[in-house]
Image (cartoon, rainbow, N blue to C red; front, side, top):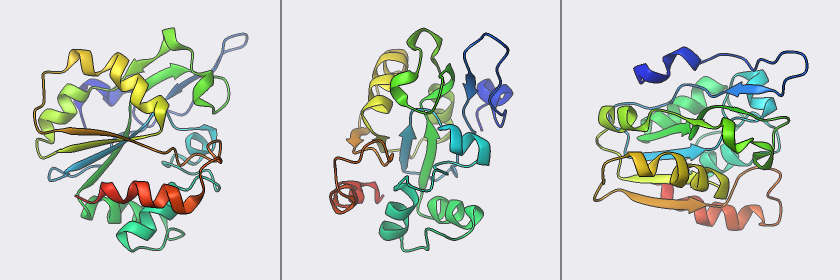
Length: 185
């Protein structure tokens, strides 16, 4: 865990009357040997309620990970996390906090978006060689809020993958699964 972001880890969404919803992301899931970092934008409402990455039952993330890494995507959350870690894959979100009514990335209020501490994370995980974005919004937020503030990282590949969100239903599961095969370290 990076120290700069510890104050927001694990906080449930909060709001006050008349103010839009302020949401906070989760801590990263990673071990020191991680080679691939998968980034979402910000957990949706179902994930925030469950306090688990990709908790919406129609999100294809865990089904895709299960197919690629060979685990049961319906197993307990702790088991799925252990499978991700053992494959040297890290999981996090671009944003530490933002104002977002609802769950859609398009509802993120741009002026409120505060990124996670990627300089600290990447320093603690020097084996990262591939950063994969779960959809266009995660990639755009990273390009705008994170990349300009990072030192050049030669040898680190950046790849946008099709969103696993149920809101991105135009692409069939089989096509998403094919595209996501690049996560293998």
